[in-house]
Image (tube, rainbow, N blue to C red; front, side, top):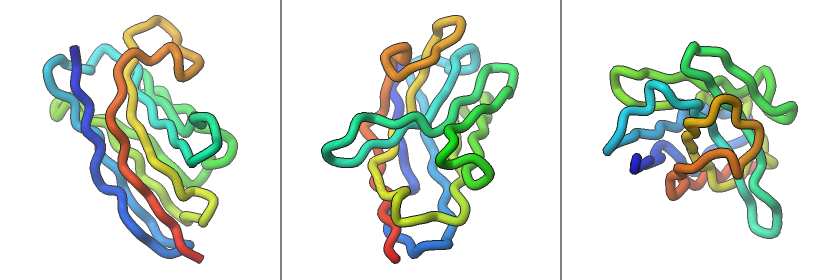
Length: 122
């Protein structure tokens, strides 16, 4: 099975930018749908963005026009560029991979990383 490891999280101030990386190993993810989710204590995991193998991107309403997902198949890595960060963006961010035809929810993703903490201060 593929192993996913997120990195790039940290403490930033509102309005700052941050880029997260998720490196995959053990299996190529070039044919997979890759996504980012986030979760805060007491809340269910929230969809952030996904990218198909053909590069098609889609993001959740709460992060549209601020976050951008991208992938580098040669490096077996997916990225999340976060701009204009807000305190409400504070969460543990997880990357995930799915080999289903058209995943639409968290349960459709079979591989997950352990997460990286993003904290946005006001």
